[in-house]
Image (cartoon, rainbow, N blue to C red; front, side, top):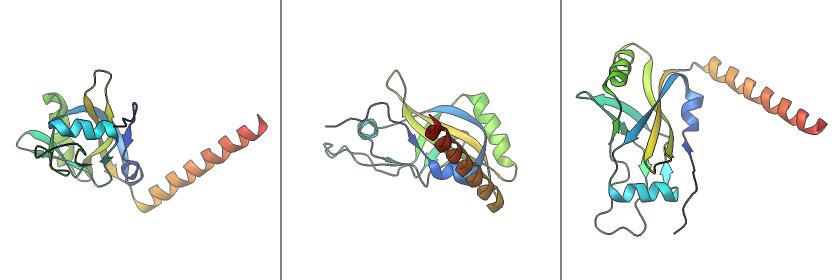
Length: 153
């Protein structure tokens, strides 16, 4: 069994589609075989989103593949998972999400120092097409500057 060492799983699509206002670190309620699959690196967060249901925060569409060595106790890959956040943070998120244009996006999944799976979620606002083009131009310019600095070194 090959484990990935301190690997962060980042939702790059979310960074392109949304502009983040602020981020929160949340715990995830997982079943037994899910944490083993995360440690093996079998995670896909490209279509993931968060919703608030009955005063609780859930993340949907994070695909955590079934554990290879699991038995009949294996988990469902795309099941909704409850996120653990403080009530104050949840209220802040809930009031902002009620406003038009704001959403909660899962950005980064990682294993903490204590061995727990954590999900970094962001309160985000959708970008327009011209915003996306502008951020791509900035990214290209930064890459070109880094290349030119390496050539001089």
